[in-house]
Length: 60
Image 1 (tube, rainbow, N blue to C red):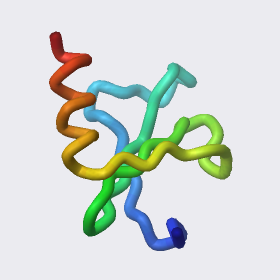
Image 2: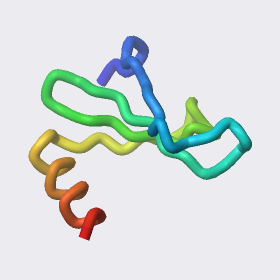
Image 3: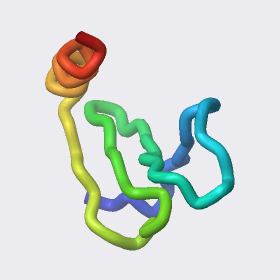
Image 4: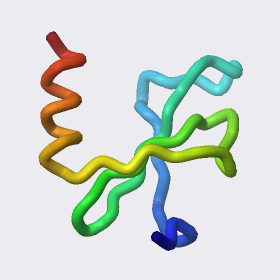
């Protein structure tokens, strides 16, 4: 999976003071997450349905 052209974004609640943040990138059929402090490190890939379920669970 080629992730070189993914546009990454952080939450607007994130600051640039070195805090713990994740960045998300959108693919046609998936959402990708990475650690903003290690942009070349490992990434998690969720299909869109699984990511929606993940968000539902962490909001509750």
